[in-house]
Image (cartoon, rainbow, N blue to C red; front, side, top):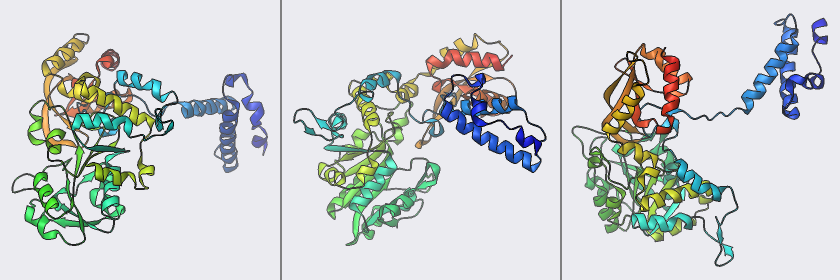
Amino acid sequence: MELLKQIPQVDKLTSDDFFIGLNQSLLNKIARDKIEILREDILSGRVEKTDNYALKEAIKTEYEELLSSSLKPLINATGVILHTNMGRSLISKEILEKVSNVICNYSNLEYNQDKGSRGERYEHVSKHFKTLLDVEDVLVVNNNAAAVFLILNTFAKEKEVVVSRGELVEIGGSFRIPDVMRQSGAVLYEVGATNKTKLEDYSNAISDNTSILMKVHQSNFTIEGFSADVDFEDIQRLAAKHGLLDYYDLGSGYVAPLPYNLSSSEHPLAKILQKSPSLISFSGDKLFGSVQAGIIVGKKEFIDVLKKNQLLRMLRVDKITLSILEETLKAYLQEEYDLIPTLKMLFFDTKILRQRAEKMQSSLKIEASEVIDTITVMGGGTLPNREFPSIALHIKGKASSLERAFRKKGVIGRIEEDKFLLDIRTVLEDKEVELLEIINEIVK
């Protein structure tokens, strides 16, 4: 066919000045793919003429798209601090600057300088954790699901783990606690009813094959009305009586007292650890406000056994995680909570939020927006059904259209009562100018 003869050769096409400065190898690969598609379109009759300029444009566009960052920063104006779909806890620039000298160089990750021999990577955070939480030992894996898996695989493979039916939660991404337990090799023994579990349910379930009495935090739901569960302290005592291991999958642990009376339904780590549990685990990137990690703390004798499980090598964390976690722990020890964005946003007083919102509004057309009181939630599978006050900028107009327009610009707000809101609590202060520019661009 005459059209096929008009298709340019790859080398000749990509040597055009149109592509100056681009990587030739990658460019040739993209060009070959585009030319092959063009050839197929000609043979099938979908294309009746060739356009070399359009072909070059298509090649260059794909080249640029391939090398553009898929992960992009967003402005979170939803008011949800631990937004699971937007990365949960943020890492402050100050902490990132402190760790950059370590992660950009060779380090003593597993090197003991005093002995001139191999060291242990967990030592870099263990002392800080022991001091902060007053625990015997700590182990860090890549997330809390991994922590649950490792603990059950180590201590309950082919043995029974007793857990309340009302605590068999499903976490984000359809991951279910029963499935994680089965994959670990543990035998799930459900007790009680969905809404009510008693201590005697645990007691009656204990047999020669029982290994662990486990409690799982209801991280993303609550059971109201005619309901009851068993305090972890009572589970501990029962486990000790029968020589069993007690384990609390806490999900999200926190240190500093929470504002807005949020601590009334959640025990801080210090209170849970006062009774010296065998093991507890929680996420590093939830209320703890650090990097994604599964943090296991408890008695040294059990941590030592966990460290010997060969699975740990597959679940261990790297130098970046440990470096950021260490700096977060140092911030906790010095009570520098402003270095932990999750806590800083949560602790913002609504008076401060209102001042920020009104300052932003003063730069907008008076009829385009209004500052309103609102409420928000923590998100990220924490503090279920617990609301606290916030301040939002209501951008006037059709809510659905505004939501789409702002989303295209990288601003994620929320619709509430048919109003499009930009909740100021989660808008970082150094993003306010950028947000104002986007508002003025959309609301004309």
